[in-house]
Image (cartoon, rainbow, N blue to C red; front, side, top):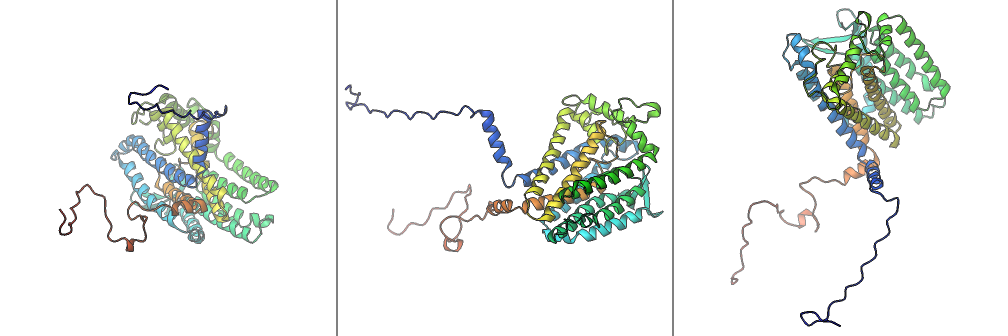
Length: 452
């Protein structure tokens, strides 16, 4: 046996363990899919999606409101940041409402259902009183609060219907009454039609559509039979047709679907210029603040058609980002509603998800020319404090429900603050004074006598 330079026999290395054969289906794409699926199945995924998605939508909305509203403010002889400052103030107040709602227990949310419904009905009645209600763009659905501040009570009607309807259906489910069709419809449908009638008196067709979507969402979650569901849908469709035929303005909006030119008498001016804004944006847009359509060509550039300005300035990438955020928010809401065992949480989460998703789809569809212009804002994104405040409170509801899931509660309970964590080695009272890791040099300890 040959020896090494040191005179010692060479060490015989053990034969390497043969590598395990890799499965033919174990590809990088499949591993990425499995990792993403595990991430989606984590207990706090819905919580992070709701909190993060709503925060990003609100922040991006503030940026776009500032960009889209400058020209309108200057045309009204107002400072360029006028609408942005009002929206920022509403976002701050809405943030307080969101945090408050996210920390409230479910019992308190249920207790607030009837007071919020009564307050919303009272305010919507006040709107119809001459001298109190104010008309904006032909719709009388505003109440002046003094100065430039106004409130739209119909926006709070959405929150009222969600909370009250969820509490009502949950109580009936607990008493095993949903098997009877009269308990399924009464008093949910009559109260919903009362809200719809008060809103239609002011001429607000867009908010009426959203409340109808919430009503159908609650009935669907409650397990309404197909015949019952179809009957309510048929009645709502007949009423909608009558409302459209009796209003030339609404009938003209139907004729402007997919319009690419303003048409005779410029009836489709807003829809056509919304398409122009999206078309001129390209893939990455013309740049933030560089929109051309907001210079007086596109009406309601910072409210109903802010999605068109987003497409012009941020391009297809910006609009797809907004769509992805709303899709993530909708998925998280469906997940919360599907995983809970509390009937009220299931109905309330489903109602809020239906509200936000339906309103976003109607707004984007109108801007894209796929749906008639309904005059509804993009949730959390468009200018309007009356729409932002109840929506942020509803987002707080979803966050509270996501935190209240058993698996999410367990995951949150395992978390400890960064400072003050328990260390191994017994209780804090048995360990003596705590030492902090700092950049400062520790003083040398005193040595016992006789030690060098």
